[in-house]
Image (cartoon, rainbow, N blue to C red; front, side, top):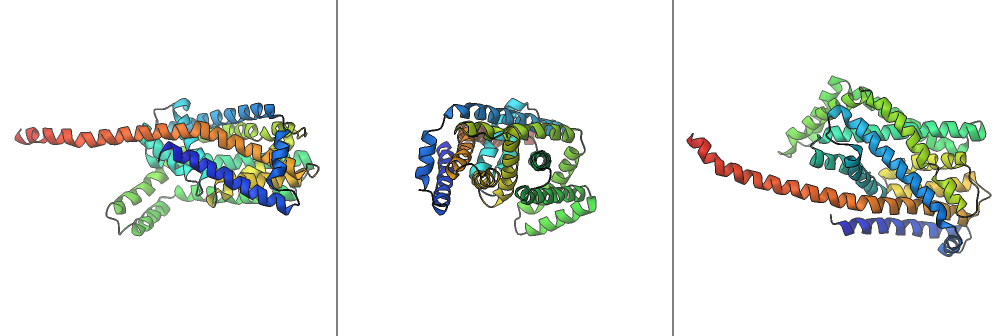
Length: 354
């Protein structure tokens, strides 16, 4: 896919957010998107700079964490070389449904670094589990600091996150059982039986994925990954405090962490059905209204919109060149693969004669 198409997808995602916001404002008695435009024109956008800074720090920590999770597989890479693949994958997840970026990231890792796709996928899946575990922990702690008990606003995302975590843990336990892996391998193999190319590859992939998942979970790197995940999400959830200052509103760091952690948890759960950026924006908008009733609806919508813009702009600036870089690297590998058989065919008669 060409680079301009990714910019187009980011633009469509932003348009969808604006359309949803326009409808939500009209239903609440506001003059649609015009209320947001007036609020944004009066905002002090200087406060977006520290928000962008926190965004950058969080993604540096993400790259370091992924590097740690890939250590058991002897991937010849460092955080800086992994950064383009990581950001490119997150960009796709943010603007495309079905969490497509979580598949693209290990694919690029295989093409650029030679790491098995199953190993890259297991590291990405473990990173998602660490994300939800950290966010649930942050929700619990911030809720008790603010309210002294679990509130109605936190209950839904908290229960969803815990249930998702239980499902992950059950999956991790089952994937360590050889009999379950063998049964799953045969089952998946039957599903792909009509395909001569995939009927042998898919069962082998299931077995490799199970082995790689056991390797990653069983290493000390999982604990280090969790220790990195908590500060990562603390940094990422502080942005709203600075964005509120852009509109002359006061939002404490604790309130920012509380609102954002719930929004990100719920938004990423619903990213299976719709782009993560749209899901996060919707929940951010709702959470700000519920948690901060003194904020006007236009201020609430403007803060959530600026947070969405930081992601769309930041990921587009970092992600689109990263995707283009991955594409160029993949095309170069394809050209090498096309040249290799020609060379071997030229030499084959000499070997046969020998």
